[in-house]
Image (cartoon, rainbow, N blue to C red; front, side, top):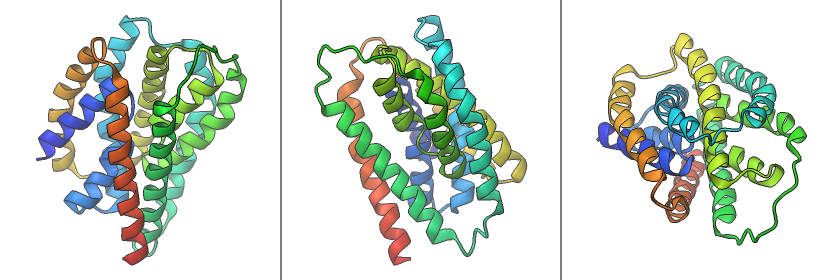
Length: 249
């Protein structure tokens, strides 16, 4: 099962740019019984490996905007370090339900935002370039990624769609590159802190590398919109279930 989960998540990431952190951590908690901190660390490390396989494909297609990526990193790097440090300093046993609630709410909100963005009609109006606001937003996104592993895909791509004139393909490629950098920094922090489960991580990576190449290849052929809508509905359900687990636990 972990091999299949890794393949499925990585394929969806390659196709839509969303799901590595938002989908992995909740599934590890709900279906495999992992503790919140270990699930976040495992999800970040798995996300980094998956995106390492996917991002070069988008770079080869010239679908990564380096200027916008630099602005995202300007705020995102300090943010992800702050979120990781916060998670490290919490009393995880006493705060477990709070972590469930934060992770669940983050996944639910980002999924609903992404669902709204995927279903609304964008029209022919090209958005103005307000990329100067990206470092501020990226700091919050980075902090959320460091704390819960979720948010880079849905919130990052939403910010790019609203504040930049990038094409949808450039949004996916640039946001995946941003997510890769956050995952490497945040995942590295959790790796040195011991917040990961080795056996589960290796199984996810084995399936995920194959899934990443499959998703990135199909991304040049298939329309990601229907898959993104289905993924957002699944993510919203997982987020709601985590919130319920926190309230009733």
